[in-house]
Image 1 (cartoon, rainbow, N blue to C red):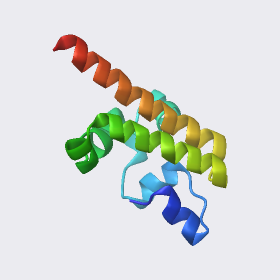
Image 2 (image 1 turned 30 degrees about the vertical axis):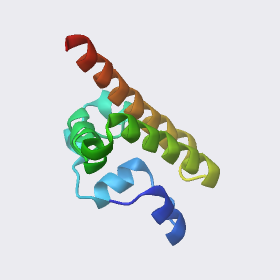
Image 3 (image 1 turned 60 degrees about the vertical axis):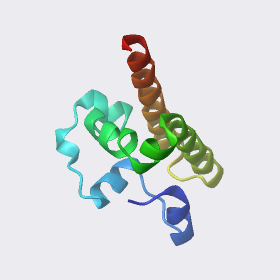
Image 4 (image 1 turned 120 degrees about the horizontal axis):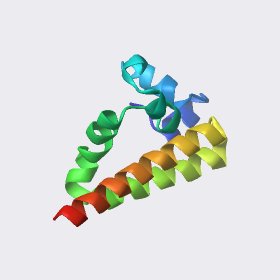
Length: 106
């Protein structure tokens, strides 16, 4: 999967959906809410972010910090600006909400 610095290096500007299609994901399995809010399914968020190597070794807090850092870079370099940043911020909020829920049920 591409990350923001890789796209900038190549001089490309690509939306979250474009990245998903490049990674072989199916956009048709998303609910309208997921598409508008995250640009991916909640299951994909769990698989790609919450079950990632970074999450396993560094924790979900580091995953959220990485997403926020990516948002700063996206704004700084103008990569599909507002819409992609908004969706990535929603992914970060989803992960934080899942963390809070897990903490409450523990």
